[in-house]
Length: 440
Ligand SMILES: Nc1nc2c(ncn2[C@@H]2O[C@H](COP(=O)(O)OP(=O)(O)OP(=O)(O)O)[C@@H](O)[C@H]2O)c(=O)[nH]1
Ligand SMILES: [K+]
Ligand SMILES: [Mg+2]
Image (cartoon, rainbow, N blue to C red; front, top):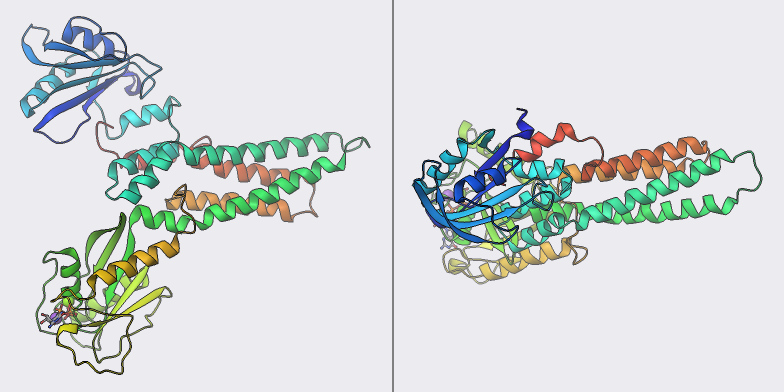
């Protein structure tokens, strides 16, 4: 039987042992399997507490059974969920029993969601949002993901795609009547005025992509500065654990290290790097090369220097914001000419709370609005800019025929359709679903 017609099952809850384990079963044999396991079919969407048995009559466990007949289910097919005690042997016995039913097999990564997509229960943005929701570790990641998973973004894109389609239809109608005098020219004016508005809505939305990606992937904050400035001590102090080796030998750190922090609900990825200086030592030189590359990709650089020394403010290939931090405030002389955004001590903890606040302020400056209905992946950003480019081409090619301008509008709508998956995205699906865990 074709893989897509098979009944699939998996442990959908977390790692065992646990209080409860949830096993999900979807496909044409799902209800048949439930009936065989508990001896009858409970009413749809109502939990039934039942003894679950093998077909040889052996008791597997007692648990809650729920059925969701298609199409009113997660995947749109007949589905069931069985809640049993979360023991390893309990779950493997139940999975082994399911294996023995006709055309039943273990689900692959993301296969339930993939079927939901194929059966029109979710679109691509919602599926990506669901993956992000499961992966979310901070409050802002959760808010962004739920916006996507709940269809807020999809509605926006579909609304825009509909406006593009309507505009094309009106233009094509105008083309059909081109020889007749009774076509009101104002129809065309209305269309282009709306497309002008759409251009600015798309631009504003696209401008939020950088922040959306930062919320999803974390703000990249890189600690840089000369050897012994106290970079590794700072990452350890902020992470509250010994991530990096600290010694008084200049040139201790060679590899780039990172830790993930949660600052007021925002994900922040903090990097420690090798001290920057001229050196002939081969390993250290490689460390410095990596440090500079990491700085170039940063969102924000913390440039450290011991109090009394000038902190570097320009880094090759980096044009973003640099915060200068004077370090070792606990042992510094009071008077110094050098100027810093903040004084810190990783040993006494002085200035660390203010550093949090400065990083938070940087994040808040980047968020133009309070809404998190933002694109959050490079895939979204690329397709949105393609859509915008085609729309701009349509608006700015007044010298061309209406047929060419309508074709640009079609391209613009197609790019939007690829975001939600209404337009051919087959090639993308394997990539997207490989991110999922089994059981989702
Ligand atoms: N008193 C004091 N000493 C500090 C402080 N921060 C770091 N140090 C000391 O400064 C020395 C160098 O610290 P590191 O954190 O290894 O400095 P680094 O910038 O990572 O050095 P490299 O990895 O070699 O580039 C160590 O002996 C630390 O204990 C501080 O806030 N106060
Ligand atoms: K050091
Ligand atoms: Mg170091």
